[in-house]
Length: 220
Figure 1 (tube, rainbow, N blue to C red):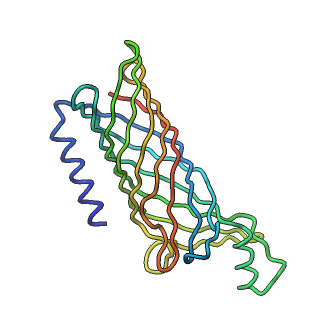
Figure 2: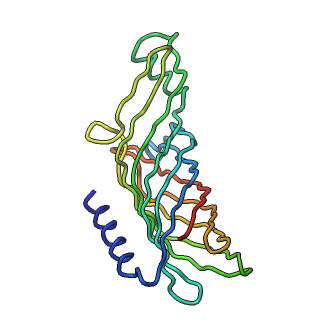
Figure 3: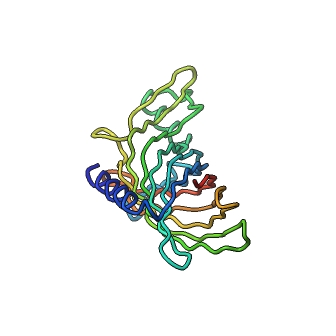
């Protein structure tokens, strides 16, 4: 958490220092979370998690550098979800409750957190009212809250996935890359992906989570 706050302070400091050159923008993204297989060891892995939808909303500060290149730090709040493999959850629940007739109708992990993207890119003016850009860079994240949710018949259960008793790690770093378009200097749209670089599981298990984003925004 301390490292994340330090990164946030540095990014905000750079943005304030470049205020005379840059401009703010707001961003809203649909996010598809794509968790990988959970590896237990070199020989064993399982598809415990599945792809699921979420969103993020935030602000960026665009700083022109030279010849179309730019630097764009920002900060965003995200809500991501993973689906849970019902077959694996059913086996666990039936074993714990010692009842083969118990089945899970819904199972997912839901997470809230903050991200600080530190993106660099290149923008090319195609038409007077249209420019295209390519961008890439690291994205630092910290999960603030997360719970696993399961529904068994009329009974709903939830359990925290972070903290001392949780199975997942809060911090993450992803590497983002994508393409964007700006219309009339203000309206913005982009498609991007982010590759997870940090292990999201504790102890002996390991898993990396990726993202696919469709983004709209407005530049002031």
